[in-house]
Each structure stands twice: as structure tokens, then as C-alpha cells.
Image 1 (cartoon, rainbow, N blue to C red):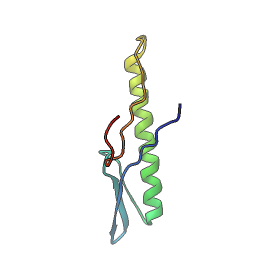
Image 2 (cartoon, rainbow, N blue to C red; image 1 turned 90 degrees about the vertical axis):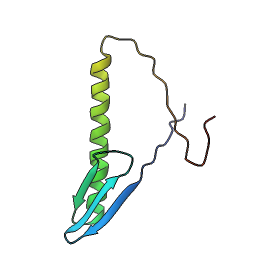
Image 3 (cartoon, rainbow, N blue to C red; image 1 turned 135 degrees about the horizontal axis):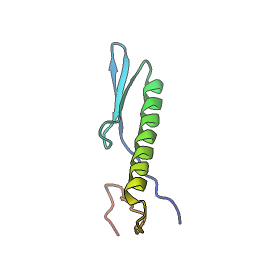
Image 4 (cartoon, helix red, strand yellow; image 1 turned 180 degrees about the vertical axis):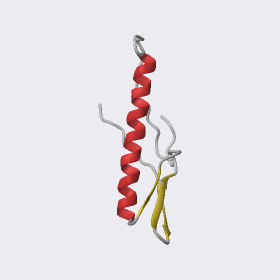
Length: 82
């Protein structure tokens, strides 16, 4: 099965001390850096930490249970669900 690719929107603002950035679709994922590249990398790293923590929490919640898992695909905004 082919893995779906999910894209998010990173927003960057120039400040007196560099850049601030956040991911529109992921509350709490925001960063500040001296360059836009630094800020982008921090956003990437933080998003990965958030996803890992959420997976770990799910594993703990589901320990000893037999859940049904399936891929959940969100189509691009200009397409409708099949």
C-alpha cells in the first residue's frame, strides 16, 4: 500500500531578531530563529516530536487492547472524498 503524503502550511514572519514561524494546522508548533532556515528546521523538529509523543500516548492508551487500525487519508482541498 502506498503511503499518503500529508502537507502542512508553515507561516514565517520577519522580526527585528530573525524569524518566527508556525504550522497553521498544528496548534502549538511554533518556533523562533535567527534565519528562516533555522526557524524552518526547528518547526520540522518540533512537528516530529509532537507526532512521536502522540503515537507514544496512543500506544499507552491501547496497551492490552486489540484496536482496528486503518489509513485515514485527507484529500487536497480541491478534491472530494471518494
